[in-house]
Amino acid sequence: MNKSNEMDIEKASEDARKLVVLGSALRAGIFQALGKEKDLATLTRELHADKRALHIMVEALAAIGYVDKREDRYVIAEKARTLFLERGGEYVGGYLPHLMNILKAWLLLPEIIKGEKPKREKRDKAAFMHAMASKSDEGVDETIDNCLKRKKDAKNVLDLGGGPGSYARAFVNKGIHAVLYDMPEIIKYVSSEFKLKDVKNLTLKKGDFTKAKFVKEFKYESFDIVFMANISHIYSEDENRMLLKRVKKLVTKGGMVAIEDFVRGRSPMAEMFAVNMLANTDSGNTYTEAQYREWLKEAGFERVEVTDLGEKERQLITAFLVN
Image (cartoon, rainbow, N blue to C red; front, side, top):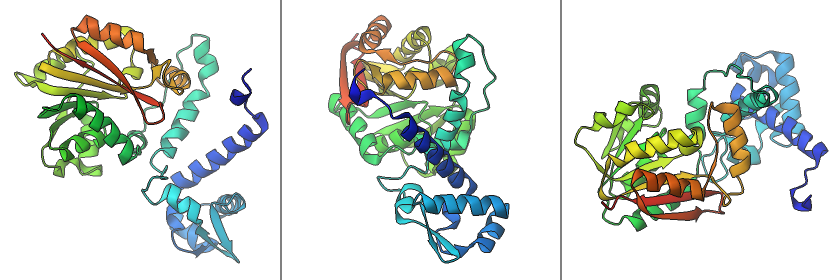
């Protein structure tokens, strides 16, 4: 075994326990409540919590350095403030609740491996959207800049499954009119939660791109860029082939499709992320560059290019509709 890939089981077990403690504290509102120093009685009253349980949790958080204890009073530690309260580059508060849901699903892997289809819990819409929105502005801008470098004359973009609108908003900030298309319940949530309804030059459209009829919802409208981030890994090969064939009908001649995802053979995250798809979807996976090139060629796209983003964690696949 490659020594660099070896895992210290004992340390990993301890880290896993700490992660659950942090995630539970965040979900219970402990970090938010300890933005200012409080005693246990006040904290218990504000959170409508069980005093014994809360005492055990805040003492544990103090022991691992995420809460500061001053005599009989507690306050969030500075390192926890940047992680869970302040929305800067180190912020993970939007992602951690979603990670807790992911880990719950992963515990069903033994049954899934045997071919069973365990009943999955209904997706926590709020946790999922905030997790999607937790990507840094720098990471989003890198993706958008790469798209516009390849399609310099773009005037409009369709953001398929754009969720919280991080990418759509970034396109708008570059002077591009964006249409964000997602499920009705998602559009309803993000329009107010992320204030997308107030963004000029951003159109919110409800629908389901997994349905064949979704293309007809755009009537005679077409787009210079159809953007797809975090979509391909949710679906099977056949579903991705079909989706790209439908997407072709929405791309202007000379227009571009842009896909951001984990590409096997290039992203060091791809194989483990596929396990997440095994646990959380019916047919999802991560795919190789060769597979993306094949799908795009079959759909009628040309000039396929794959670009590594950031530290090669994700890739941007672009292709053009020439004819």
